[in-house]
Amino acid sequence: MLKISIKESQTRRLLVLEGKIIAPWTNELNKVACQDLVNHLAGRELVIDLRGVTHIGADGVEALYCLMVQGAKFRGGGVFIKQILKQLAQRVRRNESL
Image (tube, one colour):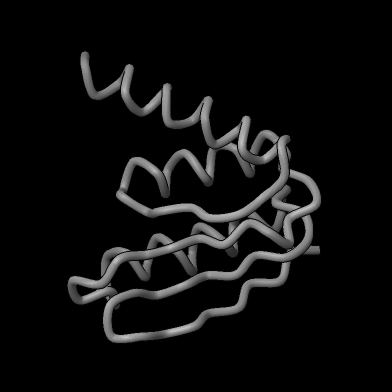
């Protein structure tokens, strides 16, 4: 299960994720986060808090990659999650240089 909490401020929208980022919950994450990026941010930054995440599956990695490409910022997480974010950032840089 994946719990998504949204905290609003004038400068950012914070999505706090708790649980497992795996299918079928990645669809909900994509819906909430991607629609927010397009429709509701109004110049604010989107920050994804991963401190409560316990597992990220292949679908979850792709969802985080999509958000990273669109400019979302990430915070928190253990060694495993930080390694995934590092690999995703490298992938974004490689694709930008093409």
